[in-house]
Length: 299
Image (tube, rainbow, N blue to C red; front, side, top):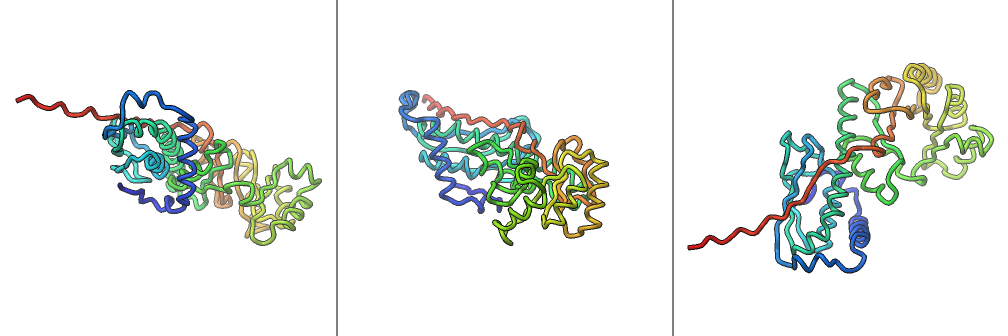
């Protein structure tokens, strides 16, 4: 069995792969599999075909984990993070195992691979746009992920070479408008959060103006998110804040799309986050085709 070579794959704990694979399989087959009686347990081979040219392969550790759970093996033709060629249909991997077991894992494995590869492909395109313009900062995802599927989607961001941003509420403090309104002020919110998280976590504050950004930075925020700024307004506000607080990180977010991303590039902006990396992202079209046994020749 070939194993994924992308370095991001080494960040996934083996027990997490096993847990997720078992949950997906249990969801899809909670009791009997009547169709299994039709195919039995004879050994078969199935070919994984990609029908979306120029896609980035992502999710192979999860795909392989699903088939490992049902006693099948996977040999990859394209490795994790590689781009599929221009052909209309491209052989991507070969799966072997008992027919009924292979079909038990088929849909769960394909769903994961299609979703992860779609995210990685979009991320790769966004990162390429940033590199082409020579922008120094980081394109990032958000926490707008599918419930129960965040590990896969955040992992796909890594394969696509963008930042995951914070993985969850515990990973970094982000004080949004509701936090500020509930606590009374930006300064109060930052101080209360810092008293709990201490030195080991960064504090980010969502701001609607340069003045709010200035208050957040003065209160001790590490990152200021300039939220829903028009590009020109963003450039001016980021420049002003960087001049006053050179060590401050500036994030742009809200309203950024693959089509207008380049308008937000600035030497004073360090991070640009996009919810569309996971929300509304197209999937990659994969299918798994069991090969018919060769018919013996008559002599």
